[in-house]
Length: 286
Length: 207
Image (tube, rainbow over all chains, first blue to last red; front, side):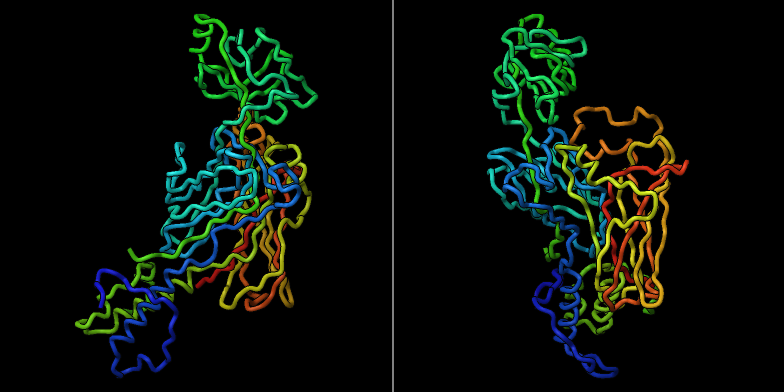
């Protein structure tokens, strides 16, 4: 017999007939062992999904919206499914596997975080965190999955799903106006910035412009970005943007000391999800 | 040990010490198997219906137009024919929803109906949503614009409703039509628009 410290689990379900354990009859050790192994198996198999949502994946096969489940990968965690979702589950199962069928442009990075009672929201979660998966776009539909997401031992779970993107794609220097240049002045609260150095010729509303999707970001540069990016809220003039949050206070000083500061306009990753599912995993014997 | 409910929340696996050669009794092993069987039968609920809308976070205006709920009377928001397995005694509906654009107390009505043989069974549930403490609680952080459910709701105004029916007139072990209806009004009787709920219906065993 194996160690008494390690539960045994049947590989398949067996059946014991009604005479197996009769009143006053002898009972074999093998019979009792089979009984417990089968019970352990019943208690350990995963059962039904915690959720499995399927969305439109048709259209032109890209991440372009077509009635699908689409959005931008904002640089802060945002909830993408209603919730928290209340799900009954088999008690005793403590790990789950996330499946995602997604579309993003090449090398765009997204993080999806599954928040459960056993894995609270983690603002600094990355792909190496137990409840977080890093998705990298390939400009095609792709599957990805993450095992061993902690879920509660009990018979129910409350699940929230958050998504975050990394702004790495520079917006094209095309129809919206220049995507980089030099900031020449900013308002006291840092939310209005002007580029009078080289006219960027930003397109104004109501034409499609840098602000129309809410997905363009300004990042200040000193070689690399030196401040958190800010969303472009509106294009006020061909050389004037309104952004949020305002540029940090230190930047005012830097601008006064050093003159104009470089900036670059990024676009957030674009994502589309065709399927997102969370399945409990079989309980394993450690 | 009598079947008194104690120790029946124990979902640990059975260890080999229950049947090792020097164990004099089969009682430990037998009761362990029975406890697991009891828990499986009692606690496992089965989801029989679930509905949830895809959101277009790039165009919240279009999403609101497509996925918002605006009805003055009970209107179906989720429905289906599902086989309800034997032994299940109750259906439990759970809705998660978001209240937007009302400065008043809002009553969100949900009704779960199972179509039975002689009589349908249904249960109504009203979730009363408090008005926002402050209209400035409306999300104004433009970083949230277009990207989160919070744009559809006042702060902290995510609602959840549960409603249940006992499968008395529509016994389990049959294919049944199941549907959930909803509408929302403020305390002045005006229809309130809100984001469509995530709806799920679970079959459960009670008793």
